[in-house]
Amino acid sequence: MDWWHFALIALASIAVGVAAGIPLSKLVLRHKEKQLVKKWRKKKLLAEEYRSTPAIDVHEHDLLEEFINKHRAKEGTEVFVGQEKSTKPELLVEIENNRRIASEYSKGELTPFETKVWDGDYYEAHTLPPNLRHELLQAYIDIHLANTIVWLWTELGRRTPNLKERYETIRIKIADRLDKVISLFYQS
Image (tube, rainbow, N blue to C red; front, side):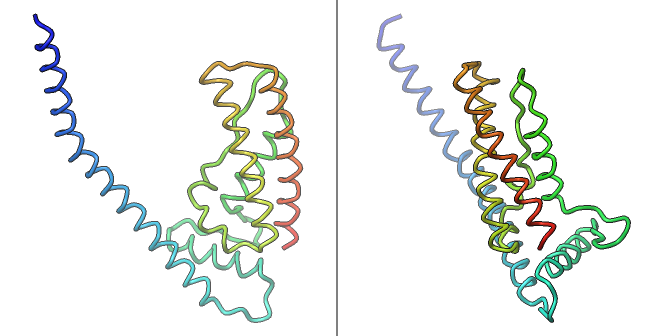
């Protein structure tokens, strides 16, 4: 086979790849755009609903809990706040789990922190009091950094003492921040 056969095959492969890739990428982008629009509409609806909640001499935390209950009731997963059988908001459960992970560190392995609720419902964090929201944001920045270190450690096999030391430093910082966040959450 001559060199131009290989060049022809390569060009034909590229053309077929581009011809198949463009419609496929448009389909994926359209699907992603629909998801973003749905998320944006939900965010806008929740924000309008929260703004329309009457603030009659009630503590901000009580309003937030009432709003969460109202929203969860629509989804069929009501949270009963202030009763004996109360279930905590998902974000608080994730924060407490991350606090436990930060405090129960074993010297052997680096443990990833949970971020599913924060990443999925970050837009609802704007309803929290500003000081609590700021501490949460800082904590999750550190958590994402720690998870990146865990990823380097486990997936890429970059097991260096420097990475382990950096994880330990961030882990302590996360534990302190989450202590602050939990106390602020219960105070507000």
